[in-house]
Length: 228
Image (cartoon, rainbow, N blue to C red; front, side, top):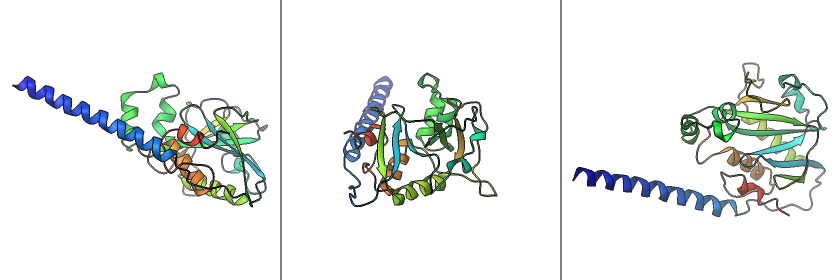
């Protein structure tokens, strides 16, 4: 009798997990495909931006310097290993701090890191990377935006930063950089199953009236709006 009860309990648990997973993926499939914005053909779109993915995580890519912002003043080049000044673009993404620092590759993912991130109880960070140039492909899409859209993206990124007493971004001192041109900074907010790095990017694009979905947790939910 006890064995039968245990088997029934396990069956309910497994059924519940599978049911939740089905609803989760179905919700993302549906809501990510509903366009959140419409293009304004009358605006003067003279600023080049990119939507970049590594196959899982999306970043927003903007010019390093223009008349509206010099990102090197916010994210100093000196904070990168390479300290290269020859860069044209900066990519910025938000995510779980544990994922960023402890999981350079999927094989490094631990159950503890996954649970902390999934349940939204960990800290978050901004990952900033400088690029000399961008190459368009299935994971990197170019888009022209206007000054208003740029300003919205800029403010969204700066507002996501956790700042020190002097109002400056807080550099995360770590050896977990992915290359010579990136750095991590403390950020606000909580990562979870329902608000991922891609949800953060999608929310920025929605605010800036750029191609985006109603809601998504996966990079494909964003990239599909940029396929030509």
